[in-house]
Amino acid sequence: MNDILLKNYSFIVHSVEFLAAITGLFVYKKYKYSNAKYFIWFLWYLSICDTLGVYSKYVKPDQFLNFLIGTLFQKNYWWATLFWGIGAILFYSFYYYKILKNKSSKRFLKLMAVCFFIFSATYIIFNIDEYFVRYLVPIDIFGALIIFSCTLLYFIETLNSDKILTFYRSLNFYISIAVFIWWLIITPLVFYDIYNSQRDWNFIFLKWQIYLFANTFMYSTFTFALIWCKPEND
Image (cartoon, rainbow, N blue to C red):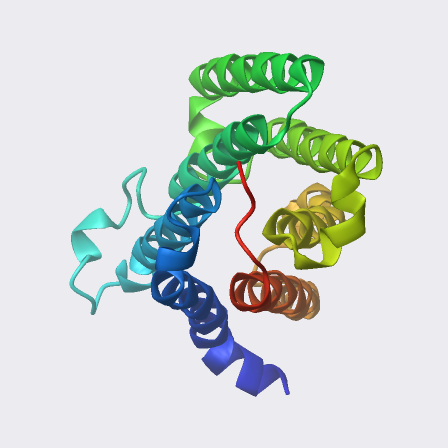
């Protein structure tokens, strides 16, 4: 089982990512006049950036990126933090700002996003060495808080509106469920990143299994929702 996971982990993860992105492309016409079009663009952003992140596999003596050996860019932690740890959080802040109707909620998310960006930039500047060798736990935790805030504000607004009558056909509902559960599962793992070394393969395989389940669940939910749901009048 572990050998299969070792050989096929990246392929499976990238497959479910691109499946959601390609599905979004096919149904784009249905959503092009709604805020959902931004989410489809985001799926392609994730797929492309995640694919670029695999460059670190080719930073080996016998690979074409061997000239990066010994440099700050040998590992892809910096890239993952930039495009996902920061970029994805800022997108979700923007997306929920667009779909929420309550002005107080929108102002709160805007303030949180600005604070998060300033905090992330400042933290990286003062911890630049860590930025290239590991995931930055404070940024991940702050990002998770923003995600939970976004989704909870959306759920509260839905419960207090007529949307509750048709929530099961709402793309934003499935997006919120998927990202909430994904961050709920993944966030605790950042505290154990210190064990992510080749000296503890049991933890590495456990972490891969958790990520594989979480990613498959999230992107499969996105794929299903894009097909099943109807565009909302934004």
